Length: 169
Image (tube, rainbow, N blue to C red; front, side):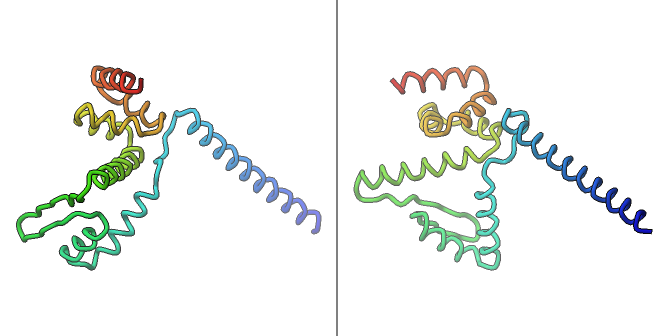
């Protein structure tokens, strides 16, 4: 009887060991494919999680309360009517404050575009003016810029690459 139990335990241990080996193989395979760029995982889930938390918090609020909460954080003034919404950007008194605000907005946009799928980001950036596109791309990490330029129209990508190279000198 004990020989049968030992044989059963050995088989269970072998099955468990095989399952662990398969799991380890899958993890290593996925890591290798991601590292080589064959597959791409979403780069920044924090932005999505933050958005979901904000949506959950704002679910019970009326639109006017939500706009007022956003107004305090972003420095914008928003007037809400039943039909339309008008947004006026807050303009500080000094040019230094304007420059700092613009730089902060640009940094936020860079984070947004880096967290996007490169094909979608390429479509949007392709519609921006050259100066705006260069301002964004020059602040992004090299891998994101490479993915976005690769997804763009060849002529537009070449033009932006040339202008980025000239402006860097």
